[in-house]
Length: 334
Image 1: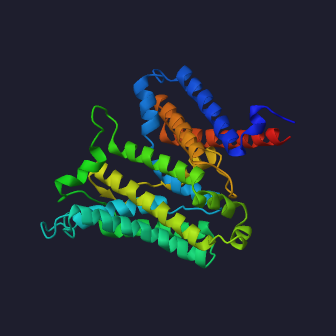
Image 2: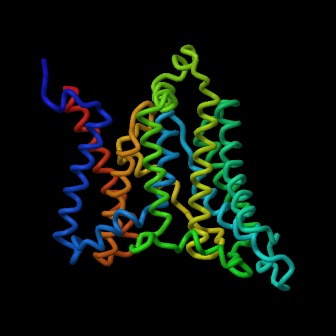
Image 3: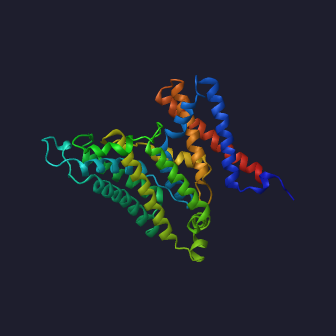
């Protein structure tokens, strides 16, 4: 009987450790070619710069584990950010339409914007969990719907005037004595909460059962539709939180913000070992995937590569890393 460590740990843990090794190798290669890449401030930036993708990745990863997609998160970020600005802009202060809002109190504006973000999640859940429409189709549709709302409210531009002083606080306040912003702390707290949900709750275990075999999960008494609905609402909420934090950081609601973020969230989940077919993956693996993506992006910037080459490099690394995952798992099963 095998007694080695590789035989005892689960496939999820094995993949997380494997991708951690990939991360170490990539970091070492980057240190060889990019000047000062190993400096402490750069390593901190690598861990913190992609906080928004990590927050999105939590919701996307759990839905992937159930065998579902959420491609609406990028559009949801743009919509929520724009609405949070519009709701709390002063009313009737200018002849410029984009300078006038609804004049709501800041707290009320945030709550209402988050409710709208969860509304996108509710639409996704209704069509996917209740009407059984494929998730990739519906969430691409709601992505365009949400971004369309942002375009209408901003008239294809942005809203950045007549805002209360409190609007920029959340996105720009740093933790006392550090340069780390509140958004990074929010990311850490959400990752910890997601890890607890995944490992220590019955609902977390049900997520994996649904992904492995939805019909068997239903026959065992799990309310599959309700569980998937709650996950889509949570993903909408996470996108809304991200949208509000980004709008606060830049003190503007921009209709084109977060373009492509849904694909980055999907990439970090896949890099972290989350199965696109469902039933497999982990939050910590997703976080490792996010750091891998951040290392590649930061290294490409340090090498002064053009955006086109940065996208190409990101695609190549993603492709190789996923192939390496498959090879490692196949070798393990052999």
